[in-house]
Length: 390
Image (cartoon, rainbow, N blue to C red; front, side, top):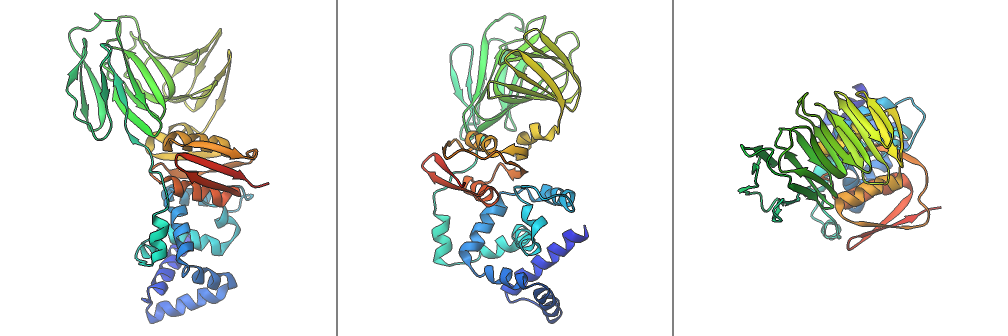
């Protein structure tokens, strides 16, 4: 906390200095800090470069600052590692002040710059983050657009009333239950996500480029759905009616629990947050405990303990990377911003950790990745070209 306060105080002094608002007492305090290290004076002068400030704004606007302080405190005194937002804090005190001061308040000051250069920078092509959007295909063949621009829905299928409440697609079972074998499909495009409530009260968060196929009503023996892509489930408890998710030749069976499934690739990862599940892949079956992840691929099934937040952060509005390769990171970026990734050179195998807000613009995310990965990124139309520096 002391380090937090020191960084915060220094950033406040820098901001006041740039705005010519230092009191006499603050001037003396600022001069002491300025003379402590030669880098500090260089740092302050760098803020007069509006283009440099804008670059740092883009970098820090993408950082999850709240998690950043926690991440910083964990890393002090450890062996330096590649960290998306905090490597420089460990290595250079001056750079640390730069990052923290921008994160706390210099961006407010820089927003007041009226220079033509800032305006030009703001006009550079950018891509906004994903949002709530999906398409619902009903069993009768009708298709309903669930984009943010079209949130009014008044429809019924054979067995459930359908409406949207607080941005959640909800199916409410009615008296015709168990009399239809039709299926509905909820699909999210790239740059889309959606939350829904199934007729049994189970909640599902569907990530980008995913789909969930589910019956118009569950039968008397089981609650079965089919997933492609990624989804987080909070299953309503019903001991007499197991809930089964099918994906990539794998099945997960639960009675009532919270878990995440990611099946974008030829392999799948099922992470248990709460309760208990049984994962089946071919002839292999394993019971999974909270804090464990089942990895399934081509008939093989392995289980390991994991940081569960890595699998659930997306539904909280955060990219959370932990020892991930740049290609894995960019795969997530591609889905959320609906862009294609093209590599000039072979992606390095270094691993990176950190957090990025999913509401950051694409340019902010790329600025952050550029800073820590020694890699250049070029955006044209809907394609990001990655120039790997040897």
